[in-house]
Length: 100
Figure (cartoon, rainbow, N blue to C red):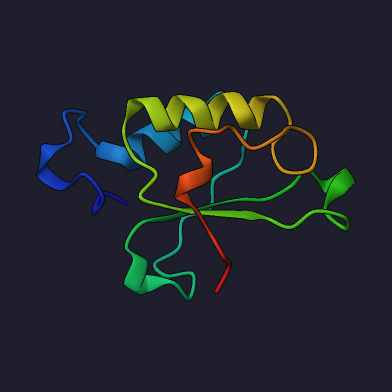
């Protein structure tokens, strides 16, 4: 992760460091992969629903999710339950994409 803001990102470690910090709180798990069949989109973040609601709700895919504000909004949403348990925040909606 790191293509979205590139060298203009003021955080050492960039977006990956932000996502790792969310995972470090225990509010979310983190799995890193090279490509999720959406490589042409650059950095992609996928938020899976909690196990109890996975059969009724699909994961939510994002592109260009980068920076402190978007990362903080993502963390609040995940902490509130994420897909199937909490409405998608308005500021994250424009970053959501269809799964490939």
